[in-house]
Image (cartoon, rainbow, N blue to C red):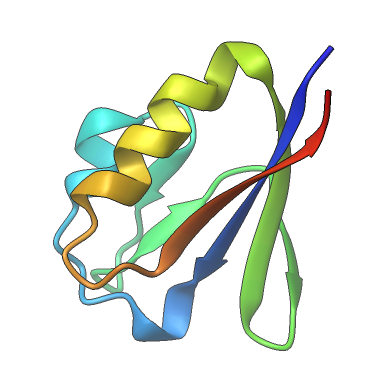
Length: 78
């Protein structure tokens, strides 16, 4: 089964909330006005999460709608 990695630079987030609007199972808005990548791990200010193919469409859409391009999606396994 295909796997994908979401990489999210929260510090560079401007709080547009577009990601949370199109992918509420992946992102939610925090009280500080920035999005949180749910069920993610943080290292050096970058948040990552591995997802299955069923979540790929929502992840790609969240990256596409981000006005500052701080969300990246990478296929890591076929």
